[in-house]
Length: 255
Image 1: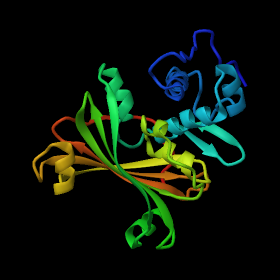
Image 2: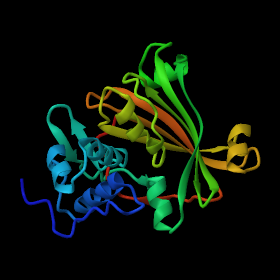
Image 3: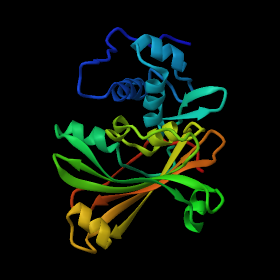
Image 4: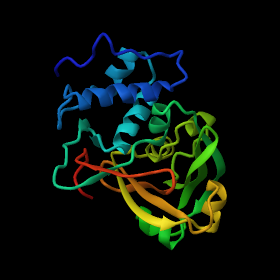
């Protein structure tokens, strides 16, 4: 493998920015600058953990962020690879919420409304390709910037690890990260589908909008290396605070 690590690549453990997020940003920089080419393997988790003096779990969380962004994909028992840029489709960019908010020098925060174990109904079972009645971990939360609510989220993870919910998970609670912590399978590919809608009574209440105000709905599914869903959810974005940019971007093969 060619030289990957650079002297200027530093992790500031005293920073308020989470360590895993700093690592994800460094890896993203390597990809965008062409130092990691499409199809090329990322350094092994052990190498990254040793180089940046962090746990493998932290490294895995950073990689989950890149999976969620469609920049990398994993192959079970083989490794993690840089995704090929897909040039034949228009891609609508919707970056990580916390990344975008920090870029604007604002403070992101998460308000957890609900977390509990639920049994999958027929609709959820179909989304996750599981049997109705299968236990899932359900999260309902609001993401804010400088205490202004901007995104209302519902997320479901096929519950298998039975690990406790840690407060640190909710600082940047991406679906890929939650799936990596609470599922036996590791996230490999993340698929997002965007549509327009109007706010329901519940969504309007938590986002501070009138009922039926315009909103963007992002439906996300996270898959394991064998392309089996392990997490699904929806994010409701305020239509008065977001706009879409069309560009040619990075993606994995179609699911």
